[in-house]
Image 1 (cartoon, rainbow over the protein chains, first blue to last red):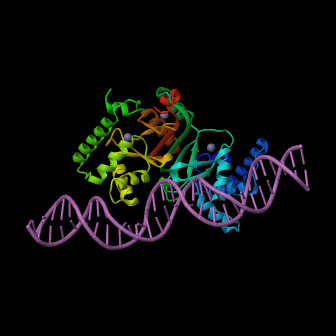
Image 2 (image 1 turned 30 degrees about the vertical axis):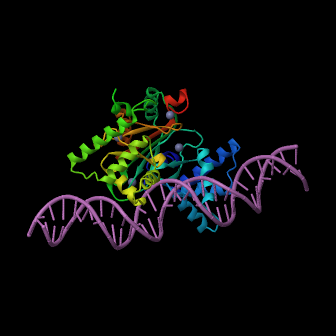
Image 3 (image 1 turned 60 degrees about the horizontal axis):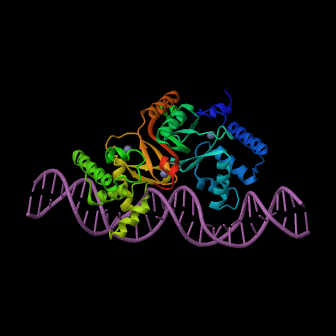
Length: 166
Length: 166
DNA sequence: TGCTATATTGTTATATTATAACGTAACATC
DNA sequence: GATGTTACGTTATAATATAACAATATAGCA
Ligand SMILES: [Zn+2]
Ligand SMILES: [Zn+2]
Ligand SMILES: [Zn+2]
Ligand SMILES: [Zn+2]
């Protein structure tokens, strides 16, 4: 099981954090190159910070991390980078947390579901086609055209049920 | 089809708005009496305003409506009433809108799903057991204990696909 | 009834998240 | 290099929500 695969669900305590980050950044660079997108130094750094946090992180947390490393940054600095990363599927916004997290399948333009642990703060990204199809069925019955789905489940992850924060 | 039934999905343009409000308030009064909850004048009025808006409405919109009718009100005034109504299942919070909407099945402590029209602003509340079971299955596979579910689908409702706002 | 504990509301200040508006710099294309 | 476009810097402000403490109303009981 490689780092990418592991990060699709709740990571174990002993997993190689840095490998996750490196791998995700490499994927993002490749993707942007393919798509002709400009992954500027700022955007690259913001994405790196999001992955390095390794759990959903707020815009102002990111802002603080940027300023602490000497960069001039104001709210628009971070929000513009977040917008770019969101638009191009490199990160997700978790509505119920007002926080941002790296996407495990960048570029696929998928609808994701999140399982969010209230103890350790980790979020697992799923892409369960079954949920999609049930929502689609309900939408059809209502005559509703789906544009955007938000599926976020809060609770306690398996690691945290056994002991304190993994 | 009565007002209650109608309000479970997207209401038609010609439906009896006032009947919906009256019916919902009556149900809330009954429920609070049964449960020994104090539906004070303020809480009653806030719930009435939420239903009268008849679509998800923001806390500060409600605040403005309260002050316009002469009541002294500050943010905590409205947020405390919203907290009471949320805790007791009389309203729902729609995370993706930062807005509040009356519950169609007060007191049932159910997990609801919302289909939100981006054209007319109406939200339809569903309680599809199928969605619940699929989420429960994923949770079980992850070893995840579910506390709270957020399922919000944005798009265009059937009325709005035919013509402008119903 | 009057007393007391509790719940509710009022009031002021502040935290948190996000965007508007406008100017400057970097980049790409010709 | 001129020109149009994209990205970034900067200042101010909007929108949503909570903290902290005082005043009032209510409920339960002596
Ligand atoms: Zn994703
Ligand atoms: Zn956990
Ligand atoms: Zn409901
Ligand atoms: Zn509509």
